[in-house]
Length: 503
Length: 95
Image (tube, rainbow over all chains, first blue to last red; front, side, top):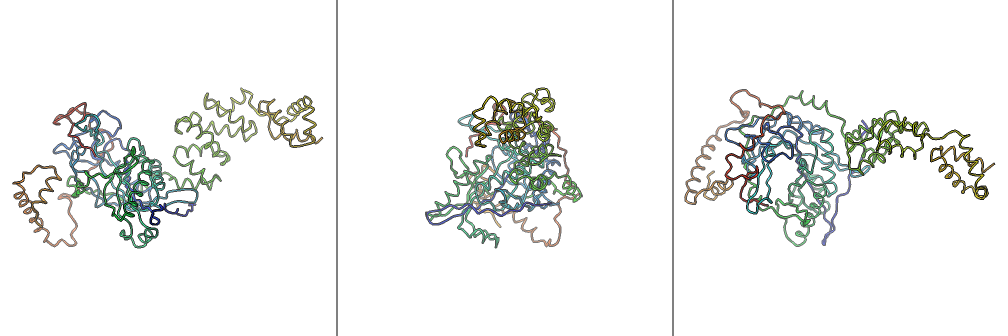
């Protein structure tokens, strides 16, 4: 396989009052497993159900209820790990993370602190053609989600819905390898893309199915390199963790604000306090979540309700064999096989469905032309109407037929756009539409010559001008195209006009 | 390791168990006794012994990804001290 090569981007530098600063970012991304039932119970994971209707006695932590693991969730964590080139741990185990909160009826979250299911991996985060950040993954573990508290339904009380309680999450923990707000957003985007390719998480950020905790610290230029050389965190600044963000834009804004806040403290001679913070998008600032601080004593211990999770190496290999072609490999193949730019290949492989659509259009046709039409006409139109590729009214076969008509010279590129429009709004077979509506390009020289003669005869003054100055020839070409409603083959028209003027 | 009065207070608070001021010393003593017992166990040399996770040779039981439970909000809320419109209602907790 041909890999795309890249160099790593420079880190984001903030010019402080007392010299330059760099930011260092690590992320914990929580991705909801795309399962029908919860991690340890048979209750549904469906979003938007009536409050407390997707709750079993296990989720509500009724006495005596025991968790039984959902094997599909285990498989998805393994798939995700394999998709991130990570080591799969054949032995993992569950631990209890103890804390008290109304939306956590068990009083603990079942998680995997000591023996996570997935170990070290890596993600290539593209920041432009030939530029990418290699972000190391530390681990992925399986854990339960908490419920939802609603605070605005009553002035004195909070309302609790446990529908989300116990839903399976994959927590993907990165090393502090991210160096700018843009990289942080692109990293989340890349994880989302890979998981959507794998089908392990739908990546719906609005519904909270993908959210991130962001660890931010600042250091002086050169310090980060010392950390990478030695692995010694003391070269880095004290970090703050910004919790629970489910928007790429907010992630970037929060990091920017937080880095500047820390720099201001340090330049003032103060010290950054390690703490958990919350981003307030309305005020555009982060603030301390003091209430969470004392709860940080999680008193982890192995969950006595669950035996260790032991996987068969052969089963892991079966999953590996079933992995789809992943975005980076697909992108490299598109560049190589279809002769398109890295940028276009990136656009076409953003979603698996779109890439499949493109390949169907491009099969046996010109790759660059197919890419142009899919990106500019189809994606452009889909974006304009807020539709996904799955909702495209023009199928890959229809678009392919339009391209064939262009290639055969039956229609011009301009007529093809009109045809695309007709197929988009009315549907139908492009070949028949061209036949029935007389959209076929006129390539018959005799017929075109006749039109040229008529126009030249009707415009003697222009004819004289054009004979003296060949640049005016374009005027005749335009008139001929107009007279034939764009159906005349422009090359043939050009040729005839040039010949007539010369003769 | 022994638990002092302040640690006992903290542990009780983390678990949100109300303990009267005058009961803290007794609690600390009891917890210390439990830890003392565990410390005694820790004197046993277990070097090279694999941790036993179950007394019977069992593997983790797994479930298929099927919705087989839930759909009874009334029963879930039956023991709630306060519930409204299908929600548990608790004293205000805001960040």
